[in-house]
Amino acid sequence: MASGSEKKTTNKNEIKIDKDYVPRLKKIYKEQIAGEMFKEFNYKSNMQIPKLDKIIVSMGVGEALQYKKLLDAAIDTLTQITGQKAVKTKARKSIANFKIRAGQEIGAKVTLRGAMMYEFFDRLVNVALPRVKDFHGINQNAFDGHGNYSLGIQEQIIFPEIDFDKIEKVAGLNVVIVTTAQTDAEAKAFLSKFGMPFRK
Image (cartoon, rainbow, N blue to C red; front, side):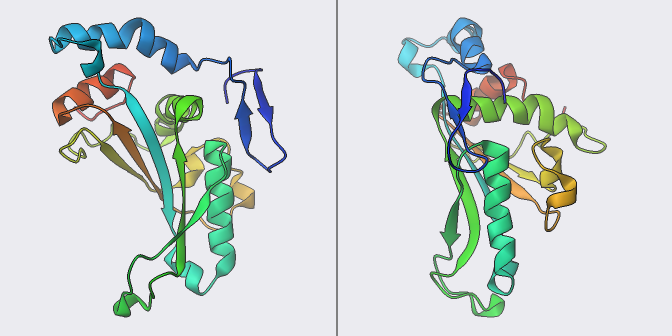
């Protein structure tokens, strides 16, 4: 991650960030991006300026029904990538075709806020995505209509925290970036200022 002010906790692979530490992207937001957004969209109040709210990183592991160790591996993977302990997710409803019953554990996720969110976002944009093979940018149409962006990543190994020799299986993950932007246009402009590499 980013600074000597970070300290490991007793939980394996989990990182604790010093409460006085201010992530690089948060500084950039306060000193530059907020002002640019205020002028560009003619906001009447600082409260209208979009902010990063949270980032949800998740992995679906359908095969976990037969191979429990794959679910444990997904939890370890997300914990390594985000620095925060991942939790198991359960099926909300039964799906007969996939032999899934409501309540079965079929995935893992992490919800990041505050400094951990900014640290992950920084590494995603500036370290992980550029490592994607034949990378030409991310889809600019993956907004949900409410200012939130969903990104599918095919291989977890683009994150340098992952040791290729120790993973159970190459797998994909999903990243949802939740902002306070009111429109997709505002959200796109906002994320672009952070360096999100949208495909032209």
